[in-house]
Structures are given as structure tokens and as C-alpha cells.
Image 1: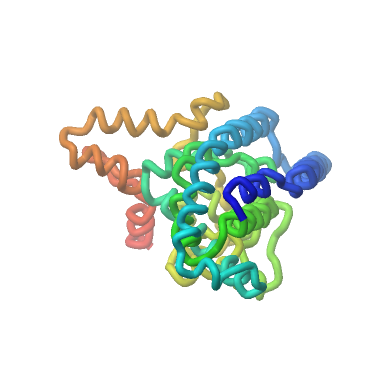
Image 2 (image 1 turned 60 degrees about the vertical axis):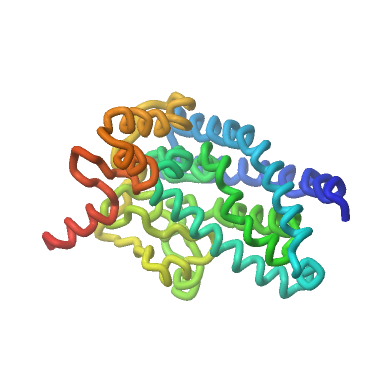
Amino acid sequence: MTFTQILSQLSNDPLTPFLLPLFGLAIVVEAGISKRHSLNLYEAKDFLTSMAMLLISTAVDIAPKIFAFAAFYFLHEISPLKDVVLRQWWAWVLLFFLDDLVYYWFHRANHEVRLLWAGHVSHHSSQKLNFGTALRQGVGERTHKYLFWLPLPLLGFDPLMIFTIIGINLLYQFWVHTELVSRMPKFVELVFNTPSHHRVHHASNIRYLDCNHAGVLIIWDRWFGTFSAEQDAEPPRYGLTKNIDTYNPVVVAFGEYANILRDCANAKCWRDRLSYCFKAPGWSHDGPDKRARVLRAQVQATT
């Protein structure tokens, strides 16, 4: 199959025309339940900001996705496994687990490297958690996202398989952005990402910061030490440790890059400037260290 043929298949997406109305219906139903029971799950300006992030991220994603597809195609062509790993059932299963593991590290890096966080922060900027928030995608992260998936075509998986699994993973994540589902059965909570686990991920409570980066499987967080269970005694507070007090879509999408530039300008040496870019959010050369792990250690030391 030629590059042009595969690219044509990639652009022929049968799911989007079906999924967009389904997502819209889910939002309408959730908003209706919220209004009927006075749950205050939605706020008009916040929801419109989420839709603006969806449009901006979709536009920004076009060029990186094309370049990524070309890179995947090239790497797949030189892979010694390309004639071994075809589209067998076991290849799809293996790719599902590998993709989910890659997503975990991509998502975790977005929280632990400030320059990457600047591209992801828009997804966490809402102080609401609802299906609209699920569509509030990170904007800047589209530019570096696909770098994390580059090893997969070298393992013999073709580009269309990879993009298909990426899409399925993101589709799964839509439903975990809700407060209407309390807890799933224990086995599901043990293995899979659930609304309870993802509420923790969107919380700004110190206990919950930078936890539960899962896409589909929560097992990665459990194995790599980033899991935190939702506590009934401490409900999640959604948003950021310092919230963005604006609905301006440009500020929401790109404001953290400006903050990094300002901090770098105030730094006294290149080491500090690089630290502002590559250390976790909250690090400062002349102020208190507000990185998540530091704040959590301080709380644990006083309890």
C-alpha cells in the first residue's frame, strides 16, 4: 500500500460523522440532568470556552498529524518487523496495550515538564467537569504529541493501525469526564480509568495533583506510583492551583507560554531559564517551590 493510499484511508474517517452527534447528545442529556437536579455542572461561558478549545486544537492538529503520519510511514517502511506485524488480531491487542502505555507517559510528561504543560493546561483550565470539558483539548500539545508514538511504527505497526488505536483511546476518555457516575464495580475501578479516577486527575487538591494519567487502563498509574483514589471526605476541586480568570480563548490556549517567557526573563542565569522550561510547573528560582510532589511531601510531613 502506497503512502497516498494510506493517507487517503486516514482522511476517510467514518467515525467522526457518527461520534460528533453522539457527543452532542451526551452533553445535552448531562446538561438537562444538571439543570433538573440543580447540580450546576455547566456554565455557559465556560462551555463556550471548551468549544473554542476544541476548534483551535483541531485546527492546530492538522499539520502535526500529517507530519506524524509521514514519519510513521517512513519508520514503518524501514522496520524489520513490518512483514511480521500485520493486522492480525494479536497485533491489534498488543498495539492497544502499547498505545495506552505510550499515552500514559505522554500525559504524565505533560504534567511534569512545564513547557509541555503549557500545551496541556487548557484542558485543565475549567473549574467544571462535564462532557464539554472532555472536548476542551490541549492546544499546544498537538505540536509534540506524536513524538511519543514514534517507536511504534519501528515495531512493525503501520500508521493507520496506530492512528486508529489512538482514536479509540481518545474516544474511551470522553465518558470519564463526568460527575454523574459515582463508582464502577471494584474490578472495573481496579483495571480501567473511570469517572472516579479521572475526577482525581482534574482536581487541584494537593492530595490529587498530578495523579491518574491513565487513558484506558489505570494499571499504569498503579504500577508507576501516580495513582490516587478519590476520597469521599475530600471532594475534588476542579481547575488549577491558580486558576485562569478569563474566558478569552487565546489566553486559555496560549497564556502559559507567555508566563514561561516572563519567568525566563526574570531569571538570572540560563540554568534557571532552562529549569523554568523543563522542570515541573510550580518551580521557582526565587520563591517557594510549589511543584506537586513538594506540596504533597509538605502536607504529609505535617500530618
